[in-house]
Length: 128
Image (tube, rainbow, N blue to C red):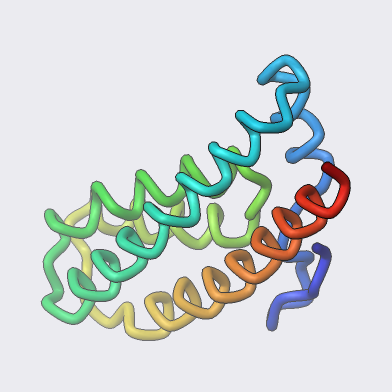
């Protein structure tokens, strides 16, 4: 669950996952459902971010960057959330140019977070 990213940051913050678990009243099944929903939606948001960057479309970039930022921070994918925050800020300022590196970083951080969360889900299944 703590596979380092290319930047040296852990993929997931276990403290955030623990806080999320507490916030759902310790309902393991609901937490697993939330993580599953995140995994399904985040892949779509990553593709929308990459597409908007490729088109240099700041307006189209704001919503998926904001959505992925918020959801990622909620499930403990902090590095991914912070990358999306930076992209969202630039997009809100009307700048979606020369962000290929950021788009690639989001895709890579998403790959790592996705794997870490799927591992976490597998561990939850093994416990139950």
